[in-house]
Image: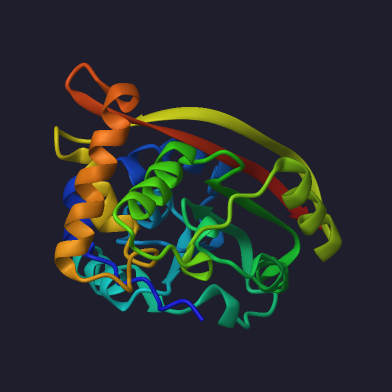
Length: 254
């Protein structure tokens, strides 16, 4: 079993706020209505839950990381946040909509998550989400594998923390659970990282699972080697730009 990711909420807010900023258009797609009950799955430190709440909806934000939830509670005390794995949700027809941004690709039991989301929705409720899709961060994955190979560190397949499905695969899973898929698309979104140390900060934040068996100095060697490998293609105009592919969809409970 993969060790649960240890999230650094401060680093997330300070260096990776693009995650929530780029999720603003997804909130617009959700189009929250006043007095709707909305579940935010994988809410992180709560920024988008706050945006949804500001539009008049009642929001419950859940995240598997206790540190992320603590940060969300401190930032937005008027909103209800709970530490909860999406695979452990057992809500019954309580929500008008379920929302998720940049979180579902961390959940490697997608069928269980989708089933739990379906159960949480009222009849006719909508599931609006965006996640990493097929091809997401392919350059970083390649660089991590290549770095560990060249440094003679073991690459352990089951430590791989992400699930990046194709449109066809995820649409099938949604439909098998009973959803009617209204729209689903995979699009390329080159994503800039902050500053010259942007790639290193990204690796510190998001590759902990994959490198969990390495010592601190060995991780530093991996970070440095990844920078060397990716600089010719991913360092542009004094900033790192990463090959993000996003899967975005609207599905409705029949």
